[in-house]
Image 1 (cartoon, helix red, strand yellow):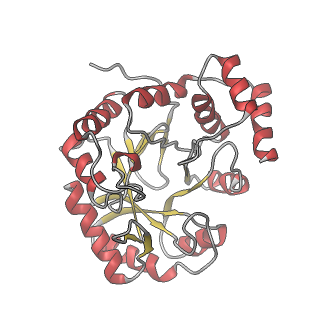
Image 2: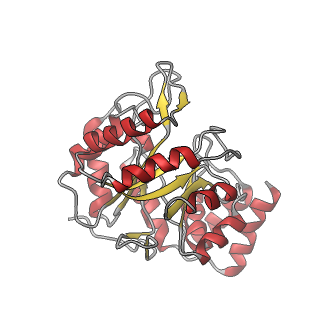
Image 3: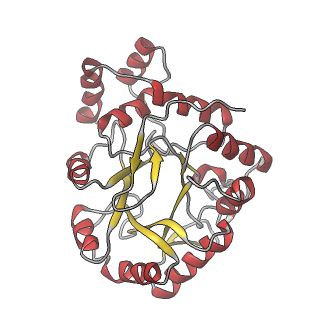
Length: 297
């Protein structure tokens, strides 16, 4: 048996009975790569991907972030093969509003037909009758939030929720104005945006969401496809006898109690390293040093 480790406490999604450990797992890297097509096709080691998911859950991870456009379809099918029937406390969060072109491109898919098809793709490939949480990802800009109304696609998602296909709704890649608009249409349990030690655009938003009990889930918590690099971060890691990535994850966990961390990896070794970050305590003096990275970025 794999011993469970301290996963930095738990968080109950607002207005739900779903309580997750704050250290989760992001499944994007389970998909493969075909030339320049990122997150495309099967992994090089399918058995290794299955073993990684099983170890994550055995270690206490009960929050997995995914999307059926990872692969496409590949990641959800691996999750089902590895973990079905799912543990009672496992919360799988997926996202919609994107489809993949044959060239690997990421294409907005906001229409009623596309959103409905995406929900059914997720249900089928995960082997579920209802999805725990579905994030609507804004695609006015692929990499960063950009203004634009999300009322129409969110109304579709709310209808699918009323039909019993979706339990709860979240948002991804959104602006504060879009969050306000969304909350007038349906209860929002989480927001997933680009945020990490060096990318601090959402500092004020995190505090606002915390006051309302809404989870904030940083994507690219370790920098994404370009890992975080900082002399200060490296120096702190040496002082704490940790890796820079462990320090970056621990900083997020100490940043605010509503932050849920979902680092992704295709390596069991890196998974274990990431999970150990939940045990790392950083003093206020060192936090101040790390905070300077974001101000200087």
